[in-house]
Amino acid sequence: MNNPSMSNTYEYGDAEYWDARYWEQAGSSFDWYQRFSALRPFINKFIPSCSKILMVGCGNARLSEDMVKDGYVDIMNIDISSIVIEMMRKRCMHIPQLKYMQMDVRDMSFFEDESFHSVIDKGTLDSLMCSTDASFSAFLMIEEVNRLLKPDGIYMLITYGDPSVRIPHLNQPGCCWKITLYIIPRAGFESVEGNSSSLRSVMEPVPLTEEGLLAPEYVLEDPDSHYIYICKKIED
Image 1 (cartoon, rainbow, N blue to C red):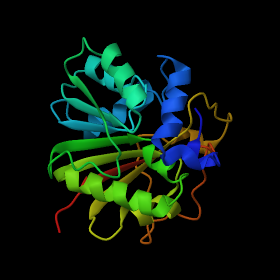
Image 2 (image 1 turned 90 degrees about the vertical axis):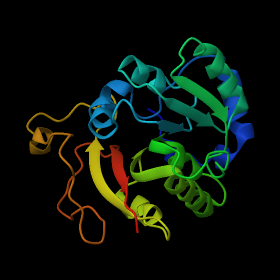
Image 3 (image 1 turned 60 degrees about the vertical axis):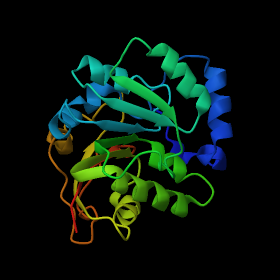
């Protein structure tokens, strides 16, 4: 799967860029990073099927549709691109569990405080980190995610960003999370036979140091792994 964090296209935070991209894709679908089959164990473990879920930066991915097939009943999907939102409304008009709205994750004031049990982000924060004013854009997005989550709500962040570059953003002023980290190899990665790290289950949480970093001795089996941060909202 493509890695937007490796791109130098500063337009990744702009609606115009995504409108043009989705117009060119003309109704096709594309899942960034990981498909539902790989994420299903994490979603099932941390997000009950009865949850009210916000899918940020939904794009034209099939993740929400697959979640409905798996029993999820209430998913609000938002994206900065009005083009893709209209495409997805038409594609999923027969699926009442899915709703679609054009919205910028940096300003989700349409929704009231504590509106959702869970927020799922698969590459959206990464895209903002490639845009102009990256740090400020990330601050606004995480501030909004925190505002929209109910107490004990879950922000599931799937990203290429390791703890050294994501934990500081997650722990910005005004946010208080209990963070559990998982690391999974990119789709299609084949481990080296005899590599002891291949015995490590992806469902085993990865311990972090007191500073919120990976332990120095931790070795990534796949250097392009995806990091899954399970962030539980803790009341101050």
